[in-house]
Length: 184
Image (cartoon, rainbow, N blue to C red; front, top):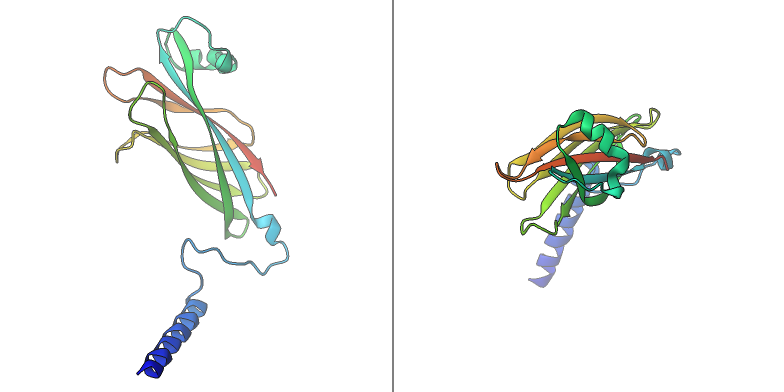
């Protein structure tokens, strides 16, 4: 009986290996690349997010002083303060010739809130262009997003993705992102 079970397990394992080879890798499973330029097909994109609160602040926040003038052009608030800075590293892997993709998610715990926020990003890049296309979603840990934006950005370009409120009486949140593309 034990021999019969062992034979069945070997046949099942052999069948699974043959099917895996025939069908290719499953989604989410890393596979080795056989091309000589495999090192060039993987990049890393670092997305630096600044979550800014807009309200009646009168003091200048030195951490965002370089973007306040741009924020004043886009929004009509008296003042701005930085709530958090988050860094999301996204490893990109080969998708189709010349294109790499990846995604990531990160929680943001704010000092004055019991409910954390989350930032998720899906990134697509072309190896030769020095730009990334990202779809970024800011959520309040519920299924509906507070903010969702898709944008194409150059390496090092600071982009204001938009603004949102957690509730009607809550202050406005502004999400800013800066990508840094690592070509290696």
